[in-house]
Amino acid sequence: MRVLITGATGLLGGRLLPAWRQSGMDVVAVGHAAAADAAVDLTDQKATWRLLEERRPEVVVNLVALSNVDACEQDPQRAYLLNVRTAQNLAGWLAKRPGAALVHISTDHVYDGPGAHAEPDVTLLNIYAYSKFAAELAVLAVGGTALRVNFFGRSLTAGRMSFSDAIIQGLSAGQPMGFFTDVFFSPLSLDTLAAMIARVVADPAPGVFNLGAASGLSKRDFAWRVAQRMGLTLAGAREITLAQAGLRARRPTGMVMAVGKFEKRYGVTLPSLEAEIESATL
Image 1 (cartoon, rainbow, N blue to C red):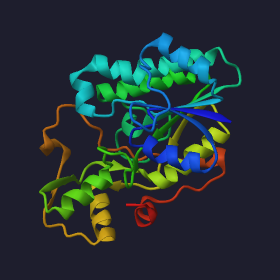
Image 2 (image 1 turned 135 degrees about the vertical axis):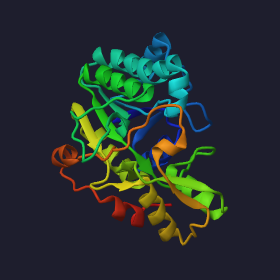
Image 3 (image 1 turned 60 degrees about the vertical axis):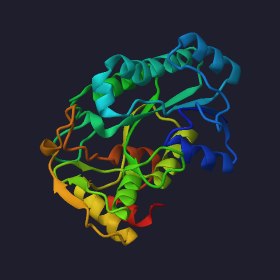
């Protein structure tokens, strides 16, 4: 099976690419760093389709995204180009290639409110969420797979940090850091997420799937548990609310995902967030 990964040199791609190549998978990496096999403007339909015709992948895994929420709010056109048009261009080519599959990485940012959210329970609060949801629609229109994710763990990509990396680096340096008591999420470790995406690539199923931990925590409690695991002091840490942060874009406070649909389809039991923190590569 030939797999083409777009955004392969980003934070998530930096974990997927070496792991999948080590496993013997035939991977074509599209990105803008030395590790990439090709560098293409994926917002350009002709360039995208030319690349895909040359490489003829059986599965395309799309990791391209503008994930900076405030940057999306400030520049909606750029958010559209990177988050929507890229997905549309990939989907357009896949529509003409029966048997080829598209696996698109989406976000938990399309949820808000208390409880664990099932896939139809969408609430869109900002440009980032709107653009990621629009991309999902393009993917679903050609029978693709959209995985709503959040993740943490040690970055293998220079210049890119995960949330847990930022916590560890900041607390280690004694920097003042605020952690939200009223924002809840359920990320997976990069280790687990890479393994689960590999399952999907081996057996793609059309539709939207939540792919997160089986339980959630506030970002404050997540940070405290990471600090405890790493033996770090909390001298520079303080508890804050989302309203106190003064951020440009509106943010959801409740992004915990219900993961039963994914578990049933792929015959797995996803771990709790507490267990993920204890076992993750940090």
